[in-house]
Amino acid sequence: MLGAGALLTFYTAVFDEAWWKVLLRFGMIGAAIGATTNWQLRRQPRLPLRLTDETLHLNGPKGTTLSIDWVNVASAEIRGRLEPQLVVVPLDPEQTRPPMRPGQWSTPRRGPYALVVRLSWMEPGTDTLRRELARRLPTS
Image (cartoon, rainbow, N blue to C red; front, side, top):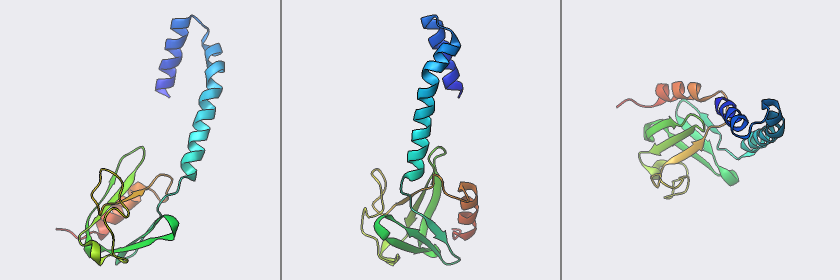
């Protein structure tokens, strides 16, 4: 919002145009882009997860599922603020159900067995998930 105000001020000063004319010209375009982006982000597939006392369950694309016991989790952390992601690395990929193949759930620039779960638009939210991960992960 602050950036849009600065851009509006810059445009009105450079082109010597009334601020409200600039706002009318570009405001509708900005609102349409914002609404379209919001709609697209909500429609993107994401990987739902479920936490139990013994296991972390992930449901992936095309109906794939994966279960990792908490004692088999090497690390699990939430990264990113604007687009939060849960990154989970199992200790032994062969002990997951079903056993993981290299790169099966990973994204580029991550390890071959890193699970990356997008958390955008998920409920109850990243703060609750952080608390639950801290409670369930074994301490070293």
